[in-house]
Image (cartoon, rainbow, N blue to C red; front, side, top):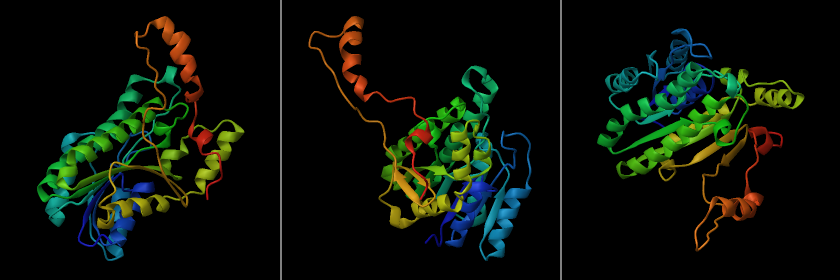
Length: 301
């Protein structure tokens, strides 16, 4: 399916990224495996995870190159793209998967925790995408797959930094899809449900939260890799600007913001009439303070 293609997978040493790198390689792609090897909170560095994935790809008869850079640093992202070109002569697929977590209830979240999560998820996705964009434009083809999250699309407790970053990634992906369609470049998002290091730190205090985490443990990263690989295939050339959620054997096309209701007054609005007319009329369509578990209420299939 991906024969002749070259894929760059960030955060490819463990979890979802690892399974994506392995599956794309099994489908014929040559893979640049990027992974800083940091801990879940972004601290530290370890070359072992990325090297192990590259070695596994080679053992299975594939080809892989390894990069240990940080997606949060633009020059490191540029080096990832340059490695793909120097090693394999082209670049066709970018999977923006690298991420960290620094969860905290909002009124206790530090500026550093917010900045670091934004830097890796949102700025990191921009850095790698921007560095690949020139290559894609010149060759008149390319595919971006970004990892968003239902935490950002719907909501979750104690993740203001992560939610802001992941919702931002959805906007970034749509912008890329719009701006680069003329160059046959596609951009889509996946919101994964899978057990990995990233989900190990999901707050689980109440019985309901504990039950949700236990369900997540049953959902393996390879299910996400299937959809990421399909999005990278030429047969998906008409799929762009979309957001998919993947939960075990379920695939959901997620909604994007559109008007729900509209109100107008020919004489214009005042604060008083907004309070007495607009808000009451729209109240039935207000969104609740939902979390992902409030929306996905049924058992994974």
